[in-house]
Image 1: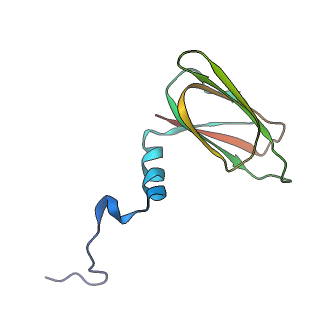
Image 2: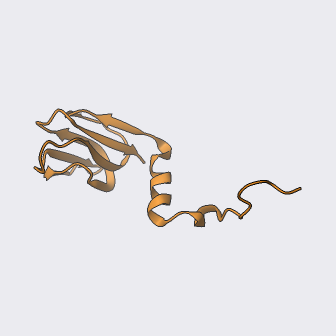
Image 3: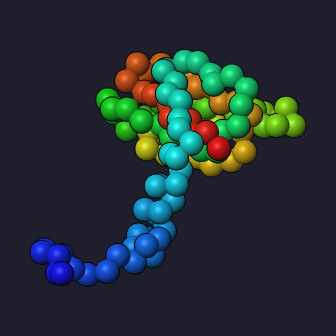
Length: 107
């Protein structure tokens, strides 16, 4: 019996580009949304993405990461759309722009 429509075989995981497959697997464990100020609390976090509408091209947020050995790293002037990866214990955001949010992915 033939199936009407598209009859080509799906290539499984090879159907997608590297970026597409990374994006598919990244959100599988879920994520937390941080508003303009706040932090995740302690946990296991693997990636951070700043989202929101920017009034100008100005850099608009400071993101502070705490690692599992309790060292910290603060990045200033982080723009929306940037994706940051690492083994984070805690993530905090501080932005004067109320349109900015931070997606923090479990991992």
